[in-house]
Amino acid sequence: MNTMSDRSRSPTTLKVAIIGGGPAGLGAAIELSKRPFIEWTLYEKKPAISEISNGLTVQRNTWRMLEHMGVAQHIKADDFFRPTDGHHTQHRNGRTGELVATSLPPQGQAAPPHQEPCRMHRAKLQQALLKQIDQRRVITGKKLVDIIQLESKKIRITFQDGFIDEVDLLVGADGIRSVVRNFAFPDHHISYTGASSYRTLVRNSDAFNINGLPRAVIFWHGTEANWVYTCPLGGNDFEITARIKEPAGVDRFSWGREASVKHLIDTFADFCPPIQQLHGLVTNLQQFDYFAGPRLESVTRFGAVALIGDASHPLSGAFGAGAGFALEDGFVLGASIDWAVGAGGALEDALNLFDEVRSPHYRDLYGVLDVLAKSNSELSKLHLSPDEEIHSRIGNTWKPEHNWMYYYEVSCALPGFLKTYDTRDTDHMATSRLGTSG
Ligand SMILES: Cc1cc2nc3c(=O)[nH]c(=O)nc-3n(C[C@H](O)[C@H](O)[C@H](O)COP(=O)(O)OP(=O)(O)OC[C@H]3O[C@@H](n4cnc5c(N)ncnc54)[C@H](O)[C@@H]3O)c2cc1C
Image (cartoon, rainbow, N blue to C red):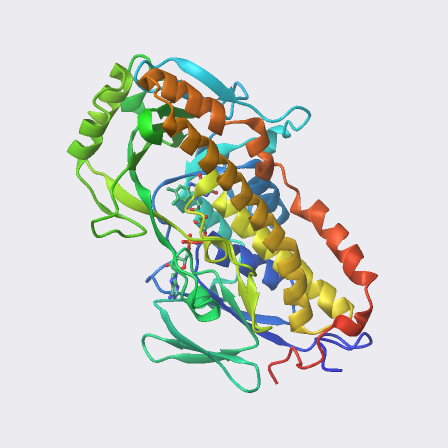
């Protein structure tokens, strides 16, 4: 049987290429580094590992992964903002400033203080992840452009500069516009969701001078699900992010381009004075068009490709926990490989297990979005005043039962899957390939 190891011997070398140096790729690199038989290389198209945009919520599930990966030690208290009163998010009527609801953890699920959610600059998270890996294995300026599977089942990857590599396992961590996903699932497509995000930073010291702007994590809601999100970020940064519903008929990009500050100010002209004053501090603005696509039936392909992070679930930032999901993917991928090695299985078996753990998780996340879409569509049929619409939408959307993903413990879920696997007849295991780069 062609296996990743004989039970009596140490595992044969598994050659892995990780495409993309975002949270998913860096998290996978950390997890794969723990397995000495894995020879991994991370390829990133940008000239350096760098963040996309500014603020990011580190949810409880994200903290769990950061602690497990040894990354939390690189994050200092001044690197993030964590509310001192235990609230997660305030929901205010943006027109009046009235506090309508406060998100708290579900009963009995309060996090230990070091895992309470916080908001931090993405750059700090990226740098903390990077510190935990051997950076000599990270090759930047390498844009993947072509992928083929050879008869040997190995994957040949070609980069824009002509560089070629051949690997046993290709890990697609290349984000929402994943080239690896296009190769694995050519019929899958993403499209503009009809909403864009506008993001910028101002100085904490300026924002804190605004009367009526609490030092809190706040969604200021408007009509048509438009909102402004305000939050200190750690250091002297204060984040402003706005979601604006927009038509699809113009050229749309996934990530980052300069936008007009006037557009932000005009869209929220009916908002309360603190938001008007805050927008008055904005000197530059970046636009991120929300793209999303349907759920993939599987997050693995050809017994040699695994999709992780946004490449595996083009959810367009829904739930504000994509970095956490990405890190969970890396954790499960590493554990699945361990299991296959221990069970004398092949790489394909590891990927099947990875898929069995992660695909249902993403199915459930998409399920929450379906529920929200249905209730919001019903809401739009009612003839409500702007304030009634805002209050109803907050009530519909920000329910505790829609927050379970932040409390999901992947390390607890995994043993259940392993138990099922270990009691199965091992005849189901693949025998067709050796997980070796010999
Ligand atoms: C508006 C918005 C708000 C969000 N807020 C939060 C939040 O509060 N908390 C949270 O946890 N998540 C949040 N998310 C989600 C989070 O940003 C993503 O889920 C997370 O960045 C996914 O990480 P990733 O590594 O999969 O992808 P990315 O971060 O997109 O990284 C992909 C990497 O792959 C590289 N790459 C792409 N193509 C190639 C190629 N062909 N060759 C080589 N390299 C390539 C890119 O340059 C990039 O470095 C938000 C998302 C959006 C859109």
